Length: 161
Image (cartoon, rainbow, N blue to C red):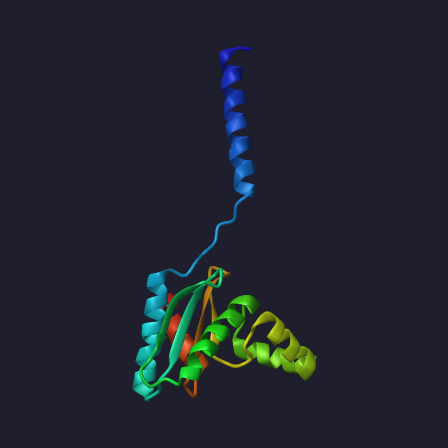
């Protein structure tokens, strides 16, 4: 084999190996800790403006907690539901309130059973954070008359500029 043929063969092998390994990985978009903090702060600012006291929970694309905040005066029963709302939004890729509507369509027993089995929360206040068509995380809010609006304010403050 001449040198040129050997070089071409080596370059081809390198490209094929690189292509094969690229097929075995997936690039993901993930909410950063800084984005989570800014989302929660925007939600808190809206809550203060409206006289609400909320709990905010932000999770990454794997469902791991990035940021949790309970405002002074927020109902202690708003903490865990805010996490569950975020988890529901992450798992379904839609608002936790729409999960409630879908569960009602399936019937009370079937919808409730699925929610319990999946550890989901069927109430408005959880929204997925969608970046470039990927669910990059989720935010859940509890304790206000408009939990979903507060969650949307948080997302918009960071990702809708």
